[in-house]
Length: 102
View: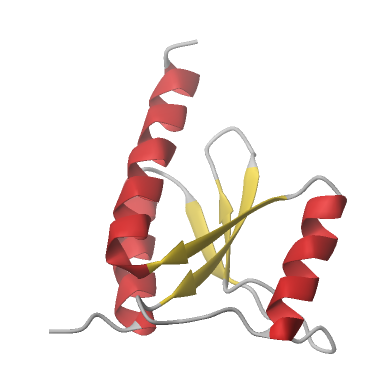
């Protein structure tokens, strides 16, 4: 069974919320192509995430918006498929556990 983007978003959101993160849908009127989600980690770090199904590709306006954010120093991840989402979650868990042990 093919995992669709919405399923990945829901799964990732549930996992991040269990870790104490804030997981918000990002909609910015007049700014088409912004990343799908904003994640706020415990401690306040902010990450933008664009999620794609395994076969998904970034559209031109998404590449532009991601580039704009990164040029400002924002952290932006593009996750393609559930495996990328799982690896991202593993990294976030390590970051959060590192913060709590400091």
